[in-house]
Amino acid sequence: MAMRTDALTRREQILKEAARLFAERGFHGVGVDEIGAAVGISGPGLYRHFPGKDAMLAELLVGISGRLLTGAKRRLAEADAGAGPGAVLDSFIEGHIDFALDDRPLITLHDRELDRLRDSDRKLVRQLQRQYVELWVEVVREVHPGLSEPAARSAVHSVFGLLNSTPHLGRRGVLPGRGATAELLHRMARGAFASAESPAAG
Amino acid sequence: MAMRTDALTRREQILKEAARLFAERGFHGVGVDEIGAAVGISGPGLYRHFPGKDAMLAELLVGISGRLLTGAKRRLAEADAGAGPGAVLDSFIEGHIDFALDDRPLITLHDRELDRLRDSDRKLVRQLQRQYVELWVEVVREVHPGLSEPAARSAVHSVFGLLNSTPHLGRRGVLPGRGATAELLHRMARGAFASAESPAAG
DNA sequence: CAGCGACGTTAGCGCTCGTTAACCTGAGGG
DNA sequence: CCCTCAGGTTAACGAGCGCTAACGTCGCTG
Image (cartoon, rainbow over all chains, first blue to last red; front, side, top):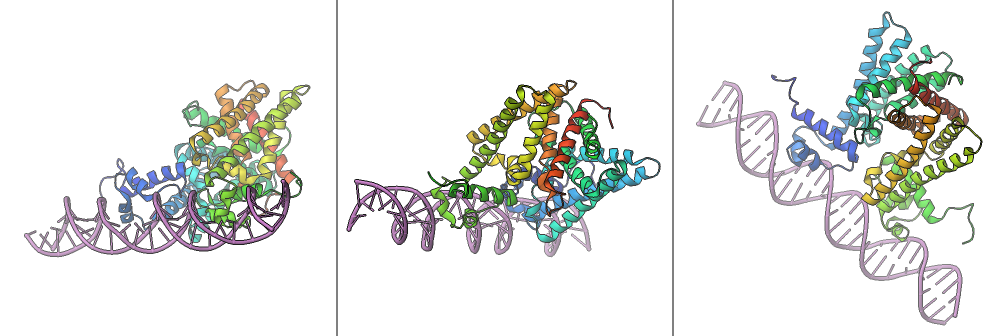
């Protein structure tokens, strides 16, 4: 029960490395021996911490979806008092960008390996994702009342695609600094929503 | 050498089904027996048409990248005569959307299974992709001179993420018709580029 | 110090997978 | 009429996989 804040537990180490490896080579492309080697133990030692390889992926994906949803709920509650819907949307975008930039492997897994889960886990993840999307759709429609509900939903998914594109950027450190990238993505997301509403602008 | 235009050759059947299966369950998640079953033959019969499972993926990915690049070159040449850069960019966007909407499995594979290729094939695909991106970057910078070269490159990748989000939309036929979806995506892409250039607008 | 539980290890099982080998069949051509 | 060859078939092999079994080794605690 002591010591935290500096070192990761074994479980956390394993999850982190598993996320990286799954993102790099796909769930089926990584063996348990590799995951073990990545944390300094070898192979079956993982089974002291997880009931199986599937469980690692499940915990990762549920954790991702949960954190996204929880963060959005918090941001909504925080800004609900005084700020307008535009500020809430900005906060949502900022949170999603932070996640995409700081946890690239997880973002990659998020929409790539969902189908490898057991039915129950997959349903849970889908449900969390749906709630997350729903929060976005509501806020987007407040900011852009001209958008129909299906159009807003499509727009939200598309903006997720835009924001989640960060893994494709930094093969080598080509991107011009984290802050600038975040700002660029934020502007593009707002512009995409605005142009979704009306064919005008330019 | 006779009959075409109505039926696909065996090879084409195999590639089509393999693309679908790879997109659904990942390269490592699909067995050769399944691919064979999908075209009515079983398992090792595939080896009369391809030297191995890897070769199918390679041909798919090289084909995708090549078609995207060829299409962009053609559109650039066609519009080069009279039209301005804005029209070329619209043409690029339209072509990419057509591809994303009509060949969803291929778009999914395009940025998901690249790492499963042999080094030589992967280099070829990367080279084709790079040329495609380069065409976009040039045109985008003509339309939006305020964008630096790295910013334009990031913006292009992000817009690809936006346009390639279509596989996430139509789990069930939720999207409101192909034409409307294409228009929505087109507007959002243009708006994203515009907002990438300047923090203004709204 | 005995006992125990947390956390590793190695050996190996059973299964799946990609691939090869050997064989079969039907259509086309000299 | 036979030969060839494209395009299949089934059987089987070898490798790699996830996972289990059996065992070892610490550090803590009564």
